[in-house]
Each structure stands twice: as C-alpha cells, then as structure tokens.
Image (cartoon, rainbow over all chains, first blue to last red; front, side, top):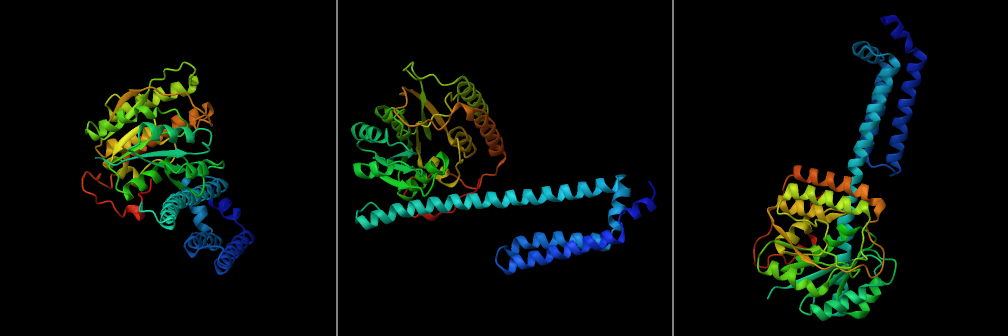
Amino acid sequence: MDDTLLQISIQPGHRIAIAILSLLLVGLVLELVRRDYLKEKYALLWVATSLTGLFIGIFPGILTWLTHTLKFQLLTTLYALSFLYTLGIILAFSVIISRLVERNRVLAQEVALLGNRVRHLEEGDDHV
Amino acid sequence: MARVLVIIPAYNESESIADVLDALKRHAPDYDVLVVNDGSTDNTSAIVKRMGSADIIDLPFNMGIGSTMQTGYKYAVAQGYDIAVQCDADGQHPVEQLSRIVDGVVAKKADMIIGSRYVSDTAYTPSIFRRVGKSLLSRLVDSVVGGGITDTTSGFRAMNRAVFGTFARTYPDDYPEAEALVIMHRHGLKAVEVPVDMQPRQGGQSSIGPRRAAYYIVKVSMAIFIRMLKRITHAPDRGESDTAGSDLVEKTESR
C-alpha cells in the first residue's frame, strides 16, 4: 500500500467532520461544567480528548504516518487507538470509583460510631 | 485486669441474637459486649437495645462483614480496650469456651488466638465446594504465614490491641478472616489456634453459600497475593499504656 492510497483515505470532508465533532464535544463538556454536572477535574480528561480529535482533524498526516510506521491498515490504526484510549479512560474511572468506595466506607463507619456516642451522651451515661 | 470487648457482627440475626447475648451474660459476665448491626432489615437492633446488656452500633446500610468488624475494632481502639474478640451472632460460636481463647491472649501466648472448628454435631455437613475451598485457602494462608493454622476462616478469635489497632486501620471488605492473618503476618503479629466445639446455626442464613465458593477462592487468593506486595505504612501499637483515647476520627488506610 503506497502513500497516495493512505492519503485519500481521509478526505477533506471527513477532516471537517472530525473537527466539528471535536468542537461540539468541547462545547458539550464546557456546558456540563457550567451547569455543575461535571467536575472541572474530570472535564480536563474530556477536553484533552476533544482537542486530540481536533488535532487529528487538522493534521490527519499523523494518522497516516502512524499507519505506515506500524504497517497497519488505516482502519486498524483508528480502531487500535480508540480502543486503547477507551480502555484507559475506563481504568481511570475504576480508580476513581475505588477511591470513592473507600471514602464512603470510612464515612459510614464514622457516622455509625458518632451515632453510638450521641446516643450515650443523650442517655447521660458515663460510657463515652 | 484486662478489659475485654466481645464484638458481634449482626445482619438479620433476630432469631439468634438474644440467645447469644444471654449466653454471654451467663458465661462471660466480665466482658463488655458490642453488637455491630450491619444494616439489618429485621428487628435485630431493637432486640439488642431492649435487652440492654450490650452496646450497639447501627451501620447506616449493609456494608459486609469486613467493614462491620472494622467498625467494632475502631470502637475498641477509641474506648481503650486491651483485648477484642470476634464472635458470631448466629449461635455457632461456643460462648462458654470464650475464656479459652481470651486467656491465651492475656497470657501473651500469641497476639491472636483462633478457636478453630471441630464440629461435634454430625448434622453439620458443609458442601463439598465449601470444604474444598476452605482447605485450599488454609493451605495457601499457611504457606504464606506458617504456624500450622488449619482453620483460617474461623471467625471465633481473640486478639490484643496491636492486632485490632492494625485492623482498625486496614481490614478487608468481604471474607476477611483469612486475609486478616496475612495482614497480621506482614505486621509481625502472631496467631495460634486452639480447638473448640462449634454448634450448628440456630437461625438466619449463612453468609457464605456454596455458589459463592468460586468467587471466594479467587478473591481471597488474589487479595492475599496483593497483600504480600503492599507496603506496610504503620507499625503495630505494642505499647501497654492507653494512648488510644481519641482515635475515633483517625485516618483509615485505603486497601
């Protein structure tokens, strides 16, 4: 497969579509942050994703270069990239959820222990 | 004299909890008792409060045996107990033999004494999966920890403050007994076992059904393996003085 074949695989129309979709994603993310549906901390992840998409839309050469270097077909490159990226994001979420679960556990235990102390204080015994 | 706290984790144990508390009052009047109610949907909590012989902590929702026991250990640390005992609410653990496991810890024979199951009642026949699982697990734990403990999943155990202080910081979520032995080993704490006679369940449902056996083995084996790779962030509190008065809000190490 030579370079010309690779180049025509991403047509100008497609590049524009990729860029527009990326910009729409940026807009959506910013709107979600503005409405407090999304924390700034996690919005960064999505802004970075959108900007990557925009970058590829403007400079599709990076995809063809990667395809050529890896001796892949263009579709395989796209598939591999998006799969790895999605996997990375899901793993990041698992880490975030695990931290939330741990904090939730400590909080529930503290609430229960404090509830016990409050009951003893209200009953006026010398246990506490 | 050593202050002893018997911690009873309870999830929907209204059928048996009263008998267990009665037995404790009869056979172990010198020990304080704490029931940790793991979000029961029956009247377990009301029964304990009405009887008045035990203190009770109500968890806001069902959290599993590990988090339930850890709540008890945090309480024991905050209240400055010397010895903590885990005892099931379903009546399987022989309360009249409590002193056998507690006295061993008082006499400093080990940091933890485990009452291991030698079931005399032939009506108790655990499923083949459960028996194979427990035997595999015991071998795995023994190969890591040593000391020849045969019943690593027994929840009838007494421990000193070095142990429950460590557990108050880090304790597994579910099926914690075997992994807890590995945590102790990593902190240089020693466990030995003594045989006790166990009773068949008086009521309620076992928390480990045969269907869960596969999950049980995989989860605990992996947890033990990972536990061996984790860094130790706290030295166990070996001090005899009461330094643990206000540990209620101490940070808990994430696992």
